[in-house]
Image (cartoon, rainbow, N blue to C red; front, top):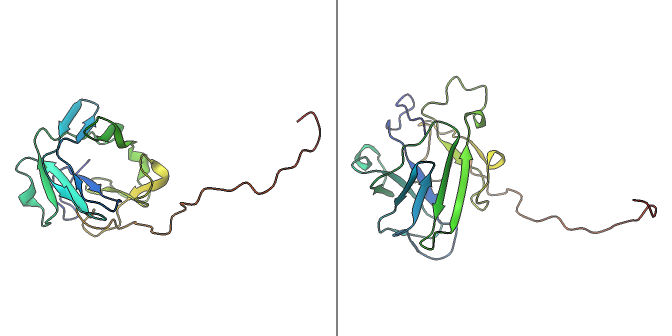
Length: 170
């Protein structure tokens, strides 16, 4: 949301979508919503376990990646406090978050030019617990595996194995 050429990525805002399913997904008709409105995604088939970066019209040439799609009326992202959602063609929320500047470690001299990335790609609609500053030398990994990706994140729900009633009043 706060691009800068300091690390090597273009000074261009981008969003990234990952298909964690087993089937191709057609993006046409899906929407990106922010606090000011929405944009509609163009036709693009996203393969299973693949990434695609989304950028504004005429901005893709600045990136050296194959999996990139230009989006008309791409939202202008606030540096922090922005609500953003991905909606399917039925207008149902597929993923959403409100990102904050304090999600970057205080040890960083600047957050400009450093992307926020997800650790677990199986945890939609997650927030600070599953997001962090990119560790990539370029400041981000658009179109490829996130630098902080954790394939071993906790995805097993807890199981209650025992209960005990200590007295009749509690």
